[in-house]
Image (cartoon, rainbow, N blue to C red; front, side, top):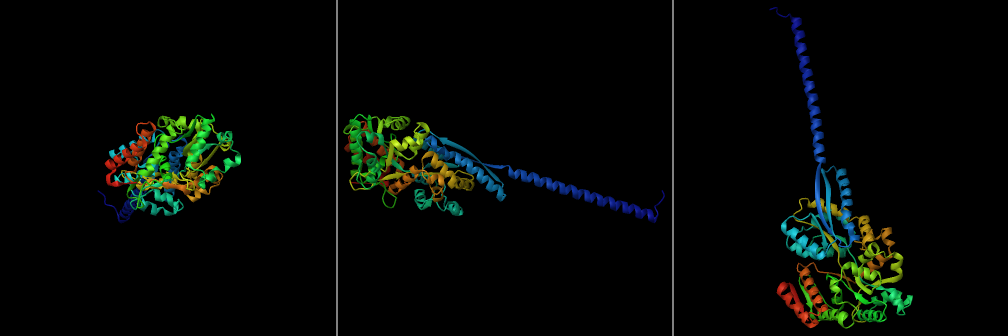
Length: 473
């Protein structure tokens, strides 16, 4: 074997070194390409981290569909915000909009909470906060609200009061409304009222110069003249509406601390006597009121079958959407005012019933759920809901929007909120409400006279609520 000379050995060594360098460079290149590939794959994996949030909402009126669809728009805005910040999550919202009976929805939500298989977000009336919070079904939101204080700063303070329970905030206001009395002004013209007298009626109610019993007498006059077969329809299925008349008679539902429910038996007796007399003495309300379908009730007023309807702002939207009542027809044939005082010189009253979003304690993404609700509470989205459904603004920036300011009905109804009170966020309030409603139905159907119905309510409350309610004369 021939050995290599010095020059050949140097050349061979150079070749080996060169090859090693090339291999090293190639390996480095492959490593960089692999790292970039892994980074891209990793980023794609992060972008694919979808978070599904489930939300249950309720009308039950169809025009309130924006309680659901606004969450979809809010998800688009939240996802854009997440992308700008480089956050990995993207939110997908699965919404459910309930248009059946409210009582069935309440039962559905309760069963979902009890089973542990509840949606991330639940919309319901604020009066359920006490019950849900006491059961540990929903989360307190104080820390999340503090983190988004700037975005929520102009929500009206009274609405924060509606979602407060035992020193904490448990919900985010979605809307509110005014509950009021509608009257067919075309009926009033037929019994001799001129346009000036009709136009002055809301001011007379505000001054206490037109009382609940003046309303009854006027309804009787219209009915006796053969203008309409019925004088007054009211809420057929209970709810907070019935307590407006109880308040008109001086009743109280909760003590000053909000910790204990109250029942004034004197005011309750007047309420029950009023409902008895509507049917059997004054004969302006049918005995079957509790069994008349909602659609029939709203259609009857829109068509002039009844003179007065004790309802809410959202009913105007339902008349427009389902019963063809135009803005011009509404202006020419219908007026509205708060619930009149029972005594001359008294102040009218009402109950406002804010709907609120709550976050389930079973939600695995409560922070994202709350951020979604912040976007859903934006002034433009909530104004769209208000204008479409006949509900009222929850914040100053919403009320300042030109479209909202141009709606004379909403502006006038908003002014009625100065007479309104809130139902208590007491855990036993729904039970209290149901017992009083049962007594009203018993009186209307002549199953119980008013005095015995008072005893029925007092006994039931003592048995079921015990120390949670105080009964006074």
